[in-house]
Length: 148
Image (tube, rainbow, N blue to C red; front, side):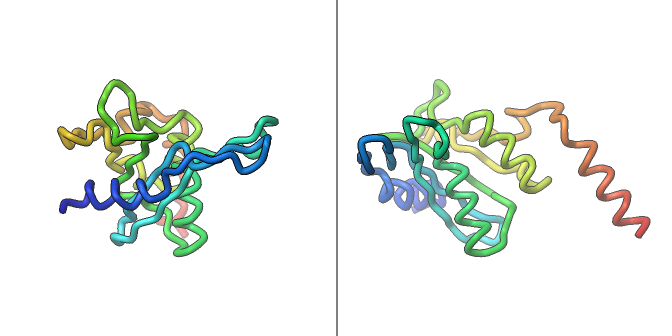
């Protein structure tokens, strides 16, 4: 079993769409991520009618990673609904999730995102957000660290 199959199987355990209440729906999109240290964290999507509680599976997995380990760097990520990513944009993190990962750690630009599970085709986050607006802040931070 390769790491992608392991991530898929762990995420799949979270997939069981359900109405939490007449206003909240959850577990219809799931995610597993592998950290730089090799730990695996999962998340599931949760949405409410008012929109105040909407969280994607990817951000929930990232929050689980940070809350439970203090880690911020993701090596690999897989997200899907009822079946593994199959190309054509399936499994792609939304813009808010892409931005969150870029802001969470500079190294996340190199994280692999599963595009097509059968072909083991991946894309790096930096390919999805070329010329990211925040690069300058990371550059300034590293300058300050060298000076200080």
